[in-house]
Length: 205
Image (cartoon, rainbow, N blue to C red; front, side, top):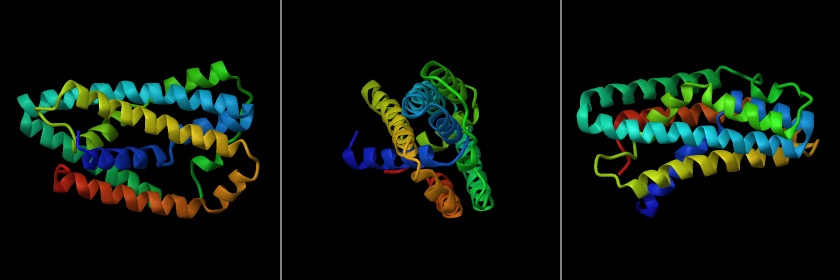
């Protein structure tokens, strides 16, 4: 995979990971309730679930491109519509969102279990990955390239939420983020709408 294409992949995966939602709320709750270790455990376990869905998506998209190109196109546009809906929802969210999640008494084992369950129990991740990865999967894509796609999604997701857990374990960080939650939602909304438009335009070269 060319470096320029991988950088594009990394950028869209980072955008997906940073989007506020139940995954951010999960890491936030476990970090506030149990400290840094449960937060990191939830982050890494969530990344495993994300990697599983990314693997399924890469395999499925490759088969659809070869056998059912029109269906693949329809699913891609459906994924773009979902991204646009997420963007509009983020723009309308204001200050409310995952940053308002309450703390909970927790342990590293409980956090890891819930991290996997939140990822695997969220079928919307499939839609999200369809919209993202449809820009990178091709019929001639090698097994190594597919592995790079999956590992990139896993590492970026895990790395982002580990960073969140480490940062939020410092008491001053969360109030700063909450005070600027509306700007976080607005930026995320604009980026998601731009990504939806990118999906409709066509694959990234």
